[in-house]
Image (cartoon, rainbow, N blue to C red):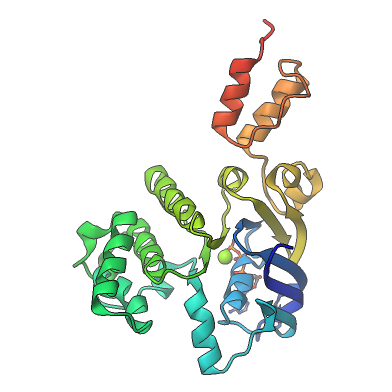
Length: 282
Ligand SMILES: Nc1ncnc2c1ncn2[C@@H]1O[C@H](COP(=O)(O)OP(=O)(O)OP(=O)(O)O)[C@@H](O)[C@H]1O
Ligand SMILES: [Mg+2]
């Protein structure tokens, strides 16, 4: 049986102004997966993430991590946050220390690691996010994309078992967005679980093992990307569009240029390979 990391049962979150951001959400997140959380603005993605490392507490319902209900006393939360790292949607909520290097060192320092290990981890994280040249810069002078990369570096340096990233590629240029995805894939190979939210359907389609689509505080769909993006009604309700790879493929099938038996591609590479194998009618 696959290990269930998070078991969310009928979780409701009502903010103090009475907004119901999550409405009896039930969801299981399994260990070692790459999960993309999708949904329209205000769907409840960030609210859900803030529950996963204990920043917010459910108004009702249950939240279990590794089979145990999350408890909110200081030692338990400290232990939980060693295992679950979160990158906030807004990097200004994350960056606290004066300089980039101090900021990235903050987490590993709090873990009580040796000085040598802290330096190794911080240097590695800066290298992965190409923030080395920014290391002495005050964080408040950074551009948005630079702030995001420093925030990601800070969580990478903590080496958590579960990484939660709230729109990690938003505001990044195509080069840095790809670079962050490459780092996440590299980390995933070390048996980590990665959960990210995104408005980039192409990224979700190509990258994720599983997508979770939410809207209005409710789960509309959870499953593999190919099946998820064929749920026309769900896609529309969550303000999503079809990934271009899937849409192009379907168009090629509909116009008879591809046989319907061709395996559905999940990446540009697979689509182009299939095109190379087809005898295209002119
Ligand atoms: N602190 C708060 N107090 C009151 N309402 C809030 C608070 N934070 C969020 N909300 C509301 O909760 C709902 C869910 O917000 P949330 O930020 O979780 O959405 P999201 O899916 O992350 O959206 P986005 O794609 O814009 O980041 C929204 O209606 C929002 O207005
Ligand atoms: Mg959000």
